[in-house]
Length: 147
Image (cartoon, rainbow, N blue to C red; front, side, top):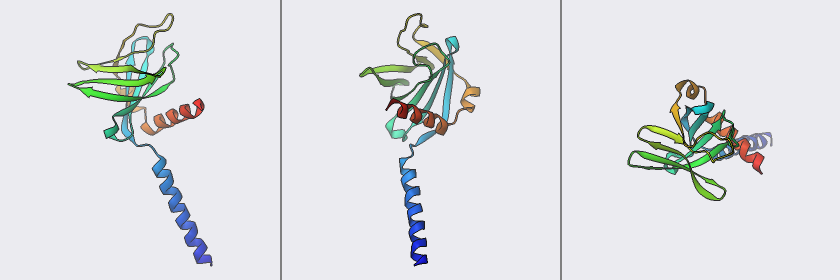
């Protein structure tokens, strides 16, 4: 009887482990963080499998209602260019673009807001301090808070 209980306990723990692994979202191995005008910081990381072409985009350190928010974006790449599209107020919205080796971020206009688009440049020091799993956790906490 003890052996049966022991085997059952082991099997249950294995099933729980597989279930938890199945619920984890695949992330890229690195974050890429960019600096922009007015102190703007933008962090990105691949979200899900490569084939999904999705990233998380976090907006930080700027006086804007989107500061501290992380968005899931679909990446449309073509001819060496890329558009990062989110859904905003029920419509498709291009939040970031890549053109001619330059990234630009587009924040919705607010009173006394900075100019849009804003140019952003890769910041290795900030990128090195970001971990994709921590970024994902921040996104998931934000999603829970919305509910």
